[in-house]
Length: 236
Image 1 (cartoon, rainbow, N blue to C red):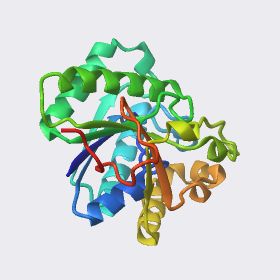
Image 2: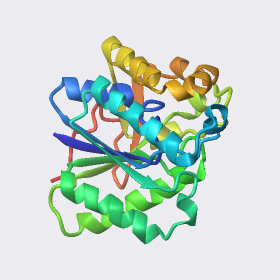
Image 3: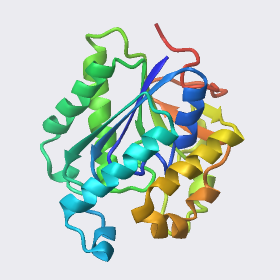
């Protein structure tokens, strides 16, 4: 099966679903990643005295290492304005997302849930644009089967220390996906690829959040009890 993950920034995948991606690759699925920005506007650049472009290039190189660690089937990194997606014409972002979906032709598309977990505006814009691109394309193509929305539960969100986090109610969870120790180890290794973000990663305590359970909401699908894979009970 083929799946396309879409996030706004470098490290979004490693802060969230890297272990799930690694597990899916180990099980023979084709896993692709689209990142909308190079993340160059991060405040971390000031510590290194880098320009936005210099920081973006460095983070892109770090992402190349992540792609190797996770054995991704493919990765595309765009150069839309980091921390500026909310100021863009959303049609431009939607076209870029739609182009990648049409190129990859995944059965499943994954992005953030409506709250974006962190609530960061780039996350919220990405959710809205990906959903719009998905429903528009689904009207005319047969390969798109599911839009999965990565999230965390409210109890996990309450444990956030460095950042305020948002979670989903248990009744909104449609998929509970369990990974193995080898996948968690790969997620840790992916985080380590982001050398420029080491201080933030360490302070965030994100490694304590990377457990064996990954949860998703599904757009316009409801499963109770939740399914155990992004590919279970796909509609035809």
